[in-house]
Image (cartoon, rainbow, N blue to C red; front, side):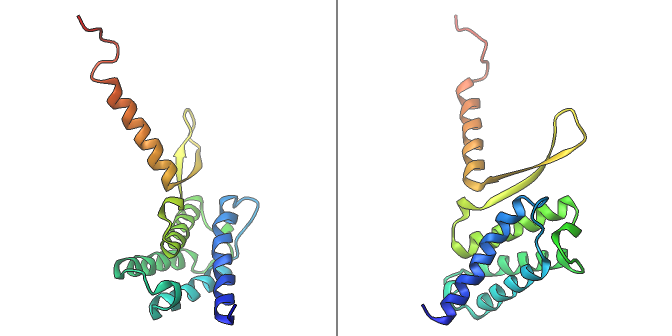
Length: 157
């Protein structure tokens, strides 16, 4: 394995580990500097259009660079992800997951988190699912609604 490939594997490994650690942010706080350095490495590869980034479309490259800009803006002046509020943590997590999915071209495996209200409470909880899981749930709900028809309790004469 060449030195360049070994370095990319190390960087990508860190990128892959970051969202996993972020999913349980209460126990594992990410250091902002490691996120910044990983994103800088990715940015240089994307802008140079080399290695695994050479096949990215212009639109994907543009979106990736915009997502990186969002992440870096949110992390500006912060030392760790603990310095972010819950909405910002979710936004950073989703952007990092999008970047990873774009690089690996695995959008269905990308985790997406939402902050949803808990029924009967003013609190919110973080719910994370893959894009594939969300699509399956949406399709199943749509199929149940379609199968029900206009009137589920009506009996035909």
